Image (cartoon, rainbow, N blue to C red; front, side, top):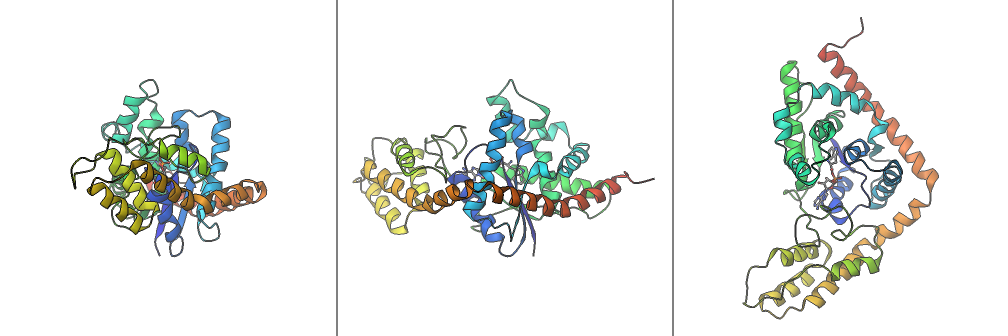
Length: 331
Ligand code: TYM
């Protein structure tokens, strides 16, 4: 049995990228491993959400985690800030995290480019906080999408540096994990980048979306004027729709449209209609469950409390030991 950790920022609804990149693996892993899944509310503060939005998004993500199949009896589900020892471990790790390596991180560089007026210290040290999240439970596996691969490499550096500096084998070096071998990148609907890249909703299909919203979003997805030569390479925006179809549709459906593309008989209207219907069918059980759970405040509060207690059992001990290793001991 291994220890597994992963988290999701509470920025709104969970989308198919979150599901296929991370959650689907969580759900399988909880059956046989010691799993911790948390809601990364400290991380969300780097982008300054309003307190009201952050608060309601935390609840929403918890509801959607549960609706997607995370079982609080099998896994520990908690809110990151309910384990404030994470913040202490982050402080300790920051002493051995260097400006140069943090500035080279791709996600930091993206944020600098996108939001030049908000280059805060929390953004720079974002991977250090992620390292604290993972190694606070001394986890070895982290189910995440492809976009988190570089962060995992940085986490391994911080963990192994700690071990080296204090000459101790304390933190395991955790690896990004996916049952299908390769880490997944689920494309968005706008023809560029990954699902969830642009904040706002047009690019993503959410587990909670109503059928008509899914249909509208998919029908608006960008396409081109159609193939003109047999077996030509698909441009990105078309390939992305096929990638999405592979996730939610039958193999025979994908094959049908692939053949139609290859012999130039494809009609994008039919193709998108089919993709939308398969997405509606795929999300239906989640949608129903989300509505049901969102109405049960007592249950959600109880689960958050239970998760916080279980997370503390493991996290408090790790941080106490890390302090002692570094020389912060009782006189
Ligand atoms: P976040 O909140 O952006 O995304 C949560 C999870 O969903 C995956 N994901 C995707 N996978 C494939 N294709 C996509 N289009 C897609 N969009 C999102 C992400 O890879 C991630 O697994 N920094 C993290 C949260 C975090 C964390 C951690 C994760 C904080 N501490 C410790 C793991 C371990 C983040 O912003 O993910």
